Amino acid sequence: MGYRQARAGLGQPWQPSHLLLLIPVVLIVVITAADIATGPSIALGPLLVVAPALTAWFAGPWTTAGIGVLAMAGEVINGWYAGRLSSRNVMVEVIAIAVITSLIVVLCAVRDRHARQMARVRSVADAAQQVVMWPLPRRLGPLRLACVYLAAEEEADIGGDLYAAVRTGSAARVMIGDVRGKGLPALGEAALLLGAFREAAHQQASLPDLAASLERSMARYLADLEPEGEAGERFVTALLVEIADAEPLVRMTSCGHPAPLLLGPDNTVHVPRLHPGPPLGVGVTNPDSHVVDVLPFGPEDTLVLYTDGVIEARDHNGVFYPFAERAAQWTDHLPEALLQHIERDLIAHAGGRLGDDVALLAIRRAHSSHDEVEEGEH
Image 1 (cartoon, rainbow, N blue to C red):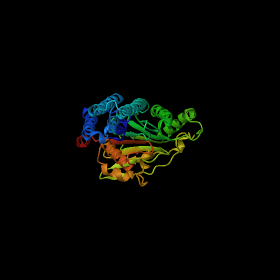
Image 2 (tube, rainbow, N blue to C red):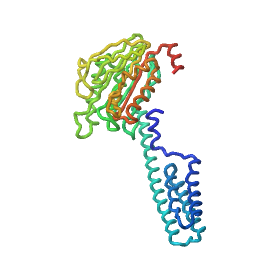
Image 3 (cartoon, helix red, strand yellow):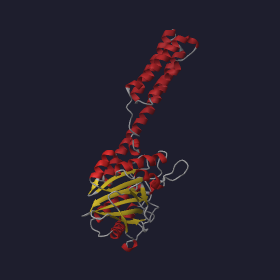
Image 4 (cartoon, helix red, strand yellow):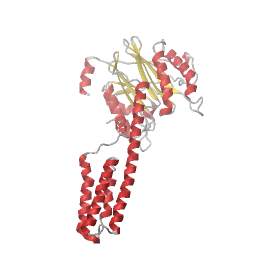
């Protein structure tokens, strides 16, 4: 199960198996029988409160209350069998079980209400993700695509990382970016940039022109989205990619973003040295400030775009995730399988908790029959 799928289970009320309910029931029967067998010299009745406490761990307030009533009944049976039902000790023990059960039921109800609120928040985040970051198609012309998004915040499935891909005539243009900061406060800036990219990608002739157009869009609206106290400190790193259908090349322009991995046959991994460019949102609107880097990109190559949450993930010893080294194990996999391996490996390296949002995007030029066979294998 992936990281997002595992976290999606948080906040969802757990529907217990009926077999689990046998545990507190059997516990009440055993304690009641043992209390009767040992006689008045040993008082085991107070242990009955364990039954509702245990039930609250896996069931709701109504079921917990029902088990509490059974626990009180067990104590009443003990008192009746011993002939001291009206004694002060038995009455106090019954009242104590009732009071403690009531407290457990209240806590159980509060927990379930919080779980429902978390579920609603998560559903809103899922809807926002679908609106802000449209799901990428598995095919874009001759390209195969796959993506993974892992939000660092427990309450959200989206944050400040972003990606988008569009067809522009006989080519595809792709963007991956990282808004300064993380979580929901960065969502507005991510939405702004994605909307600007989807429009400008069809209008600008070159990647530097596209970067300049995105900068102008950021300059027009970024001030309205900046939190108080952070004026002039918000920016977005981005990598713009263009892949023509008929050329075995990939063109890239970096706006302060990490270079991608280029995975080739025979477990080769190449990390290109890109010309650095200014991030978006810092006011540089001159296209000459951005350079186009051109790399070979053949049918058996895979381009992996990512945000810095990947390479900055640390293990318990503080060691950064060795991304290029780990990715070399799966260079022959299709994008979907490749990212599944990377996701599992990254989460295992980070001990199940990420310190920053993570976005991964894998692109491979389809190779007809070879890809069809490989898809069946992986």
